[in-house]
Length: 135
Image 1 (cartoon, helix red, strand yellow):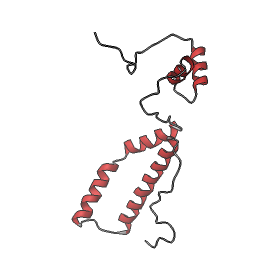
Image 2 (tube, one colour):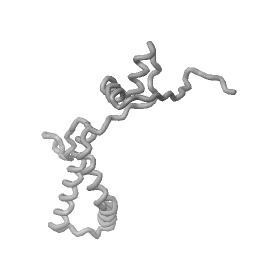
Image 3 (cartoon, rainbow, N blue to C red):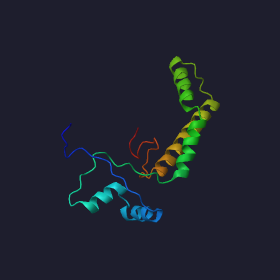
Image 4 (cartoon, rainbow, N blue to C red):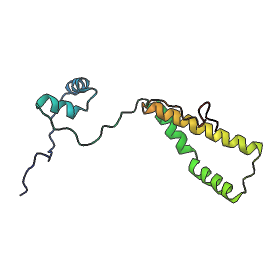
């Protein structure tokens, strides 16, 4: 037999009606339900050892971005561009420049949608140097 320690957690489950579970979720917000229950039951609940993940703020935007990434051949296309640049075989024509700028705009749009979907604060990473940088 093994010796029990305070660090070891054991699962506990109970049945609730849908209304009880909904009320528990409402009362717990923004905490995870288990953490809320522990805080109500015990004077000094054991803190969680794992990090809290942010919930998705906008599932529609996240679905849009993930769908676009799935349809794109972004990784393959970037790899082909890198090979062409390194070998010196990439012709710099107006069409090439236009295609690269369109790809950059698409990546920026996906980044913007991901930031919104994950509820992260927007920041300016336009790739442009700040005014007065001289770069």
